[in-house]
Length: 425
Ligand SMILES: *Cc1c(COP(=O)(O)O)cnc(C)c1O
Image (cartoon, rainbow, N blue to C red; front, side):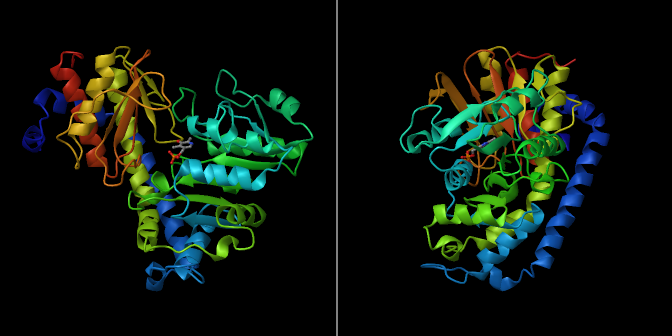
């Protein structure tokens, strides 16, 4: 084994250090495997209940009327997410698009959108119009209000009660921390917040941005009363195989609104050809629980390696996980750069390129990104990025298999070690 690692560029010191850390993680990994076993069974049961057959993988073109594969897959998603209906389509281009559809389909001029988990994910700022943008909800007369999470990361119930006004139509909850350093919300916490909102006004719609959270726990937010649960297929539920796409699972009323917005009033869910992606959507969903487990093990391993070396990590090495993102604060730019170089060097694709920081639209500093992915931009595949500015933190996620996630983290450590940035005690 050490020889194989050596052939990939991992030194004996890094190998031994990694094995030492891994020896302490058996119990954590066992829990992750147990959740993934439960979710694997959940997915198989949903596919059996919906009578998935080989015909479901057939391609459709044109209008896509009577697309059995598409309609059956949507029934499978509805079952898994405990909702009445779902939209799962290649026409939904990404997570941001899915969220934009869910919001714009269910809000009307004069309505207010209330985020109760603080600032939403960056790309939603333009969807909502927090940052002025063409076509935003603000342009259509939808107002926005926000309640921040408490310093401990919990919901601020007093402030939520005060923020709910007669025009409040939809409450947004973001499960994952995204690229912030707050803790990620558990499904139980989200369920409590939904119950609280509904106790004040049962007609308020509760939408959960579920990106990066799928299959991390045994429950999904639909089980605890969310009206809409929304995410991307190039993250957890696509299992690394879906080439693009997004999903919205929710009540029949909300999903029909979304379908009229996605396609056209009057047409709704009836149209939308599948272009031959169905097999990858089904097979990716089938693999998603074990792929998510691989990514989670990678995140736990990285947290423990870098915590042990004295760096601040969120979540910390022993905390329970509610999403697959790991933040590591190096405090100096070479740390972020070396980490990303290691992730890139361990990739099956584009391993020979060296990532470099560069100016990206929408960011106020240079950003470095590492990804050697089969699907462009896929962040369920091993990937890392970080802005080159204080506190010099890197965000790391994904890994389709545990051995690959492990190699990526070991390679990141190798790069830091070779540059003398860490000492392996
Ligand atoms: C990734 C992400 C999104 C946006 O998804 P894209 O597919 O990148 O558009 C939205 N919210 C959260 C929390 C995310 O992690």
